[in-house]
Amino acid sequence: MPPHLRSGLSAVLIALSCLLMPFGALSAWAAYGLADTGRYVTTMAPLAGDPDVRDAIADTVGAGIMHEIGHELDVRPMRGTVAPFVHDAVRSFTQTAAFRTAWNEGNRAAHDAVLRALRDEGDERDHPVTVDLAPITAQVKRQLVQDHVPLADRIPVEHTEVALLPAQELSRLRKGFRVLEIAGFWLPVAAVAFAVAGIALAACRRRAVTAIALGTALGGALLALALAVGRSLTLADLPDEVSQPAAGAVYDALTATLRTACWLLMALGLTVAALTWLTGLSGRLGPFRLGRRRRASAAPAPAQAQQPTRAQV
Image (cartoon, rainbow, N blue to C red; front, side, top):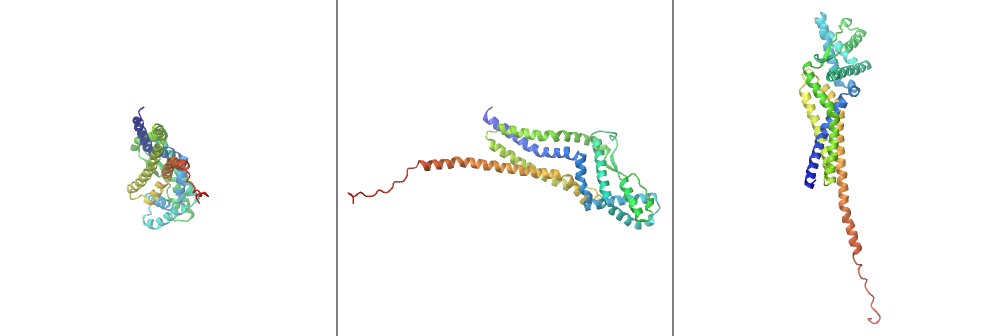
């Protein structure tokens, strides 16, 4: 193969490798991070202690209980009196171990329901994916009864289902999920294969390694920037009734692993580029120093001053 053709093909492979690196990290995070129920529950578990998340849950569950009370019972004159007790009881419940258990189980049930729908398992094809909040309402009702709140024993524990995925979006989401599952494995493999092939075809392999390292660092930085922009856009598009601080905490928890991957890509790329540059610099300086030593050893020694003979004196 002609040298210029090899160099051009090497440049194309290196560019493809650098382009696929951030997309590979994103797809692998979605396929192996978000799609794993155990990892998802572990990721979401610390949010049970986040104040913003607890406040959002207290407001949502409290409003649902008051709605059921007003719908089932004729207590409208007492709504202003009962509502603070309900809200305080729910807020107090969010600080207990029972809430953390309910939080983990609720996230596990919601994640399993979403995965079954996306993988086309079960009968969710024509129905929205929902999660039931009745267990949390039952826990709050028991605590209100123990605190002797008026009419607490008459609070109806309804199966309050919260929609997670709308039915009309399931078909499109299934296709995207299948693509992510395939891309999560093959994109990183393709990125590594293109990088190895680009280095093997390059006329100067040190430059090829440096280019791949800098491209990897740049890809990590761009992916981190995309996460920051995505966070702003996600929070800006939320409805008014959704707590933005709580949504931001959930977004940060879900993308924590991906942000770590971004920093690893940047650190790895910059480190490899620096080491390659330093080894190249030492390689260029080596022959120069050796040449100076040889010239110094080959130079004639300076003539010593001769002592005058007795005849000259």
